[in-house]
Length: 332
Image (cartoon, rainbow, N blue to C red; front, side):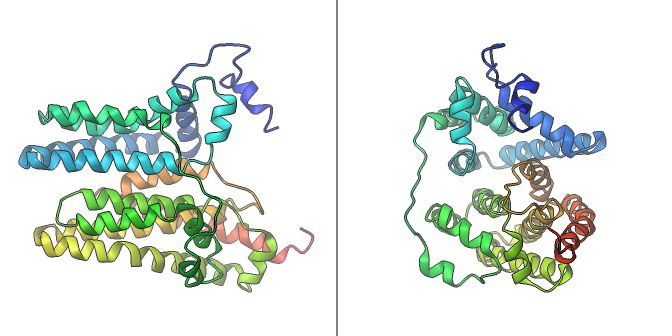
């Protein structure tokens, strides 16, 4: 069934029709339509316009922030490209895969580019499209054991976090250190710790085996609570020091930092709950990435963090019901 899907969609079948460079954008649109109803898509569009308006207002009030905003946007896209798990598939199945990824990254950077141009930051606006060259740069891969001592400090029940440390180290450390070093600047540390939070959300896509599931907790209630609270504690250790340091340099931003931090905590919690709402043993839930990306847009905007919280509360009973079927069905 999975092998036949690309042929049915007609997007990965170059022998039948030419594949456009917008193929990845078309896939994202299909995922978005499946993940959200019409009103959810309208809310997402409203949130994107709000983010654009806020960026434009910030750049008009402080034009010196434009280089740091550009740097944060480029680093965020670089981190996204480095953690892509579908790169081998894209290079095998999609003609001109690098061009398709460049178009996808251009769409992600378009709101920042519009904000820069409307604020007359022409130099930074012309430099930003250079990030589209990322698909032609090498991706850092290593099979060696990394962060061994640090992974031992993570509880065994949070197995996905141990795997994330193995795959993302030392890049995640560099992002965190950069966020701490530039905490005196506006927005840039938020971009960097936001990228770390997205790495943490991406770590929730692989599903452990049912044996590991049953060995972690006696029932679904305690299992889900342990997973969510453990994830919140770990991500709080990452983002709270940066936000406290940023508040010390810019006390007037205390409420923005507080709402941003709460939004990231809710976002990571939502990624955990969404994983177990769709849990399948030994599978990778790549489709969850679209839902998490939608929640991330709302989570990073002050005052709109209520939307991912509602999404979290909606998925919680689904996760409980799905886990109950694995805890109590002995025929699986």
